[in-house]
Image (cartoon, rainbow, N blue to C red):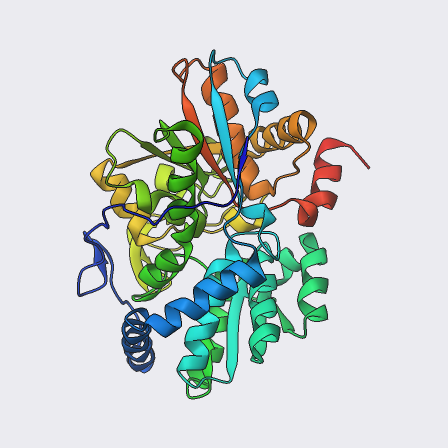
Length: 413
């Protein structure tokens, strides 16, 4: 079954977080130099005014419909479910891969792009790892007439070359970052330097539900369209809420967007799936919730991977979008309160999920999303998924950007 239109008005109970300090329990806040504080406060004030302005909401909703393709489909995948070992299992995919630009990233990019114009900013700057956020930002820059600069780790540019080409075709100035590990964390640092140097004319369009306040809330709010739609759609399709909502977790934007509308429904299990890389026990992974400890990263207090001296640890994942040593404060809070469980899928398990979904349903997922698919496969194989379960899985992106990696890893060249 495919459910697309007829989405009901959302009626979920909003959580109480963040508080007035930008905190989700003990997580979040602003750990930034004084020079950035004024820009963050300006952004927070502009966002509060925008979200109270019906005209802003109407424009965003209209553009999400006519330019992004929302609501995205809720798609039952019975042939995939039949290949799993759980009797009576039903699996629905929230098809964010079908949104314009191929992932959920466009939801937040468009919202922040409109906010930048409202603030009188003529330029946007962004970081990207897998390139999906960068493509979304470049797209929004072209749509709204904003100059666009995107920083990307040189290592990520090598493994995500198709998205580099897309960004440049869309008119973005894509700048390679050769410092540090040459990955997402380093791209964030360069983006912040640029923003601070050009704050009068530039908005930093941060891509995930992390960083200093108010970014975790802003990104969460713009991505919550995923869960709002999915909640209404599955009620139409099945007449009840799912038993599980599963999403991959890097920084956390697709996961928090899918989870937030279900946080008030205690019987719905929320499962965030991180990158176990070559195995959490090997140290070559990006599983901050599973193996990290609380600390400060990129201006926020949350779970992260760090050594005994508090230095950020190196990471590894076959999926560039999960190859990040931290996670957002709201997901950190959901972990600590027990509202969300977490798991970690290895590179090998994600590749198995990628293959099974492709061969059973004709859907090639992004490697990031394939971690969630692989975890569902693993749950079933370990007989930890009850019979007759109803599962909603956020398929956050499509896999055309990963074809070279998949060919190499799976011997398909």
